[in-house]
Image 1 (cartoon, rainbow, N blue to C red):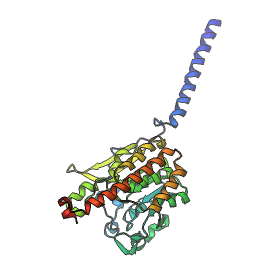
Image 2 (tube, one colour; image 1 turned 120 degrees about the vertical axis):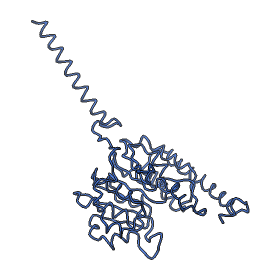
Image 3 (cartoon, one colour; image 1 turned 90 degrees about the vertical axis):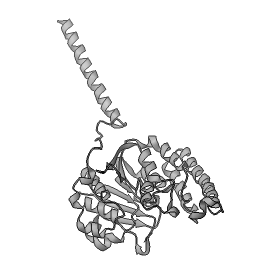
Image 4 (cartoon, rainbow, N blue to C red; image 1 turned 120 degrees about the horizontal axis):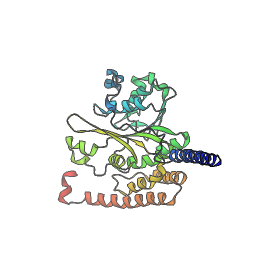
Length: 327
């Protein structure tokens, strides 16, 4: 009898140990990339078709979005599928993409959009304000919208101090553009935030209207689409061509990958931000990225590219026959 009781006790002890181990396993995985509670990003879902009827004829006519036919449906579809609450947009222009997002979240409870742009006036027409089409044609959507213009993104994000679960990034398209923007945004994104990148193939699509003076060599969004750690989605058309937009659902614990994103800055830059902006960004990096290597990498990238761009300009303005047609 004692032997039976002892064996029974040993059996229950093993069960308890197994349960404890399983609970510990769940807790550990809650804070790792193997998070069992992390909902897998559905990369096979047809985002461009999801509730596409929400994109009305009025939106197509008046939003004046600088996108192809499928890209607005892609943005709308991801939002309608995953229903983010705190949406961030960096790069507004006339407000076409703002209209898509605002229309997609209009019936999602407690959702809102914060839009940021460096320019107060529309970069294509300085007589118009950034985001003007939202106010002009879709004022009913503005109740869920805050627009901030005239300064760098990190200045606004620092003051807002919010954590966003959706980001549409659509600014310069060439280095360092979005490479800096993502560094500004990452401290303010939720762990499994969705990032949509427009113009991931702009450097290739522009060949359709090839203009030598607009040749660009260092596209930023395809760099980010390749480098950001997360589940990724791109859209393939029926003719097997790819659409100029993509999305990433970030993996948890992005701090593990910060070094890779700063290393992207060591690629050649197409243009040089003004030195006041550079100083401000360096102060931002000091505050939100504690490791000294991040600041050192940013500073190194700026200094080297400053020399690179100067040498390129000297060569560009030379009498070398290769550049005669570009002058």
